[in-house]
Image 1: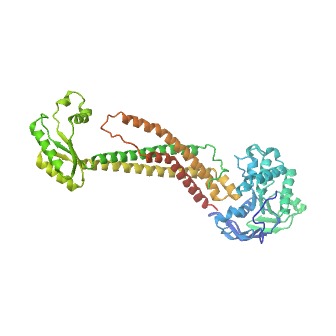
Image 2: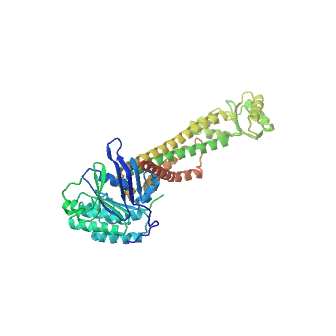
Amino acid sequence: MALVRKKTDFVGDTVQLEAVGLRYADGPDIFSDVSFTIPQSSFHFLTGPSGAGKTSLLSLMYLAKRPTRGKLMLFGDDVTDAKRTRLPAIRRRLGVVFQDFRLLEHMTAFDNVALPLRIANVSETVVERNVSELLKWVGLEEQMQARPSVLSGGQQQRIAIARAVVHRPKLILADEPTGNVDDAIAVRLMQLFVELHKLGASVIIATHNEHLVARFPFPRLHLNEGKVTALPPMQASEIGVVAS
Amino acid sequence: MIALRSELPLKKGDASGRFVVWLVMVLVFMASIAVTTNAYIGALLGHWSQSVTGTLTIQIPVMLDANDPASTAATEKVLDVLHRHPAVENAATVPREKVTELLKPWFGAGETIADLPLPVLIDVRMSASEASAIAAVSNAVQTAAPGAVIDDHRAWLNRVIGLAEGLGAIALTTMALVTGALGLTIVFATRASLAAFAQVIDVLHVVGAKDGYIAGQFARRALLQSLLGGFAGLAIYAPTLGFIAWLASRIEDGILPDVRFPVSLWLTLAVLPLAAGAIAMITANVTVRRALSAKV
């Protein structure tokens, strides 16, 4: 899955939030004063109760929303008020797994996964090789030419994950990426994220699956009532105990 | 700007797509009529103005008998004056057969015409066509034959020009309206598609697609739809024009002059679908870019 990059590295942390606030139009604050840092090549779980704003926090990081307050840095670059024209280049360095997958229904599994590479004008030979290899890895060798609608939820989820990582992003943001698969596949998918983390990507996985979190020794960012708390890796004994 | 690959499911013949094709077909058909009308009027006007400029028609009024010595004398006298006038190139009486021929559409070819008392017509070709020269010739003719009627066709031609200009303005207005309708059609169809494909567009943005890339896909679709509609419009216009030409050809000679369309008309007609395509492509591109620029 080697991919030639023009810009191989950057200085500073992958993500940095300083006193970030977010609110919709006239609504209440989703969160008002969030600060944390995601160093290069790190792995974090983003935990917190449903409705705490995990998805909103992720959407700030994949530039679908702008902070209403504070400062957001990505790849050492201040993107708080970055011009629209600068965003595509930044977005190509991240990979996003949506909770609802957001696969393009009119395209095959292969074309869905190939999307980020093709958008970045990667040659078709490389696309062919990398996409096939990755789809094999996630166990969808047979389904490459299938449309998402004929696949199971778990299969669709694996396509969504493959699409998010095929271009070897420097930051992977995954929203409940193992919600629709059984435990065995969940672990396999987690291993994929761990591999990418070892290869240098920063990974943030939003989940409320405590069993999954307890299984991997990675630190947590816990979002609750508009505040983010950094927590150490979860111990199996903590399962079921509400984090303070 | 034109992406070769399409991530938007735009190829499927969705309702708004067919609507654009049909509408562009109608618009190009209407534009063809406007363009042809304009060209026909221009050609007609050129023909008429060329055939009457620098000419005078002099009527020596009637005589019950064509061989009446009085009128013959008047005719001779007028011709004599004209031949000697410096502003006149030549002057000749219109042969009675030709006058009969001109009147045939109204009176038929029977004996009625033979018996009609007809004025003597003198065609005059001027060597100078300024108003002063015409006035001088008129005066000379009036003196020679006080009853003579002199027509320099000016008043008639001016009215014809006025009519032609009015029709030309209508043709131009039609073109402007058609262009506006095309633009609005594309704007609304594009906005409808943007709304329909909002989620796909979001995904494209997330994976790093530029606005121009997305706009290019819409622009390409608008171009193809409008070219298709445009050539269809032209295709249904061709037999229409042929039919009109056939209707015109059934009218007897003398009422409508034989007008040849300039090559520029055929070129303009051929360019209409291309112009529709270009307008649609640019409009779609701008519409998408403007809509997307409002996003994060």
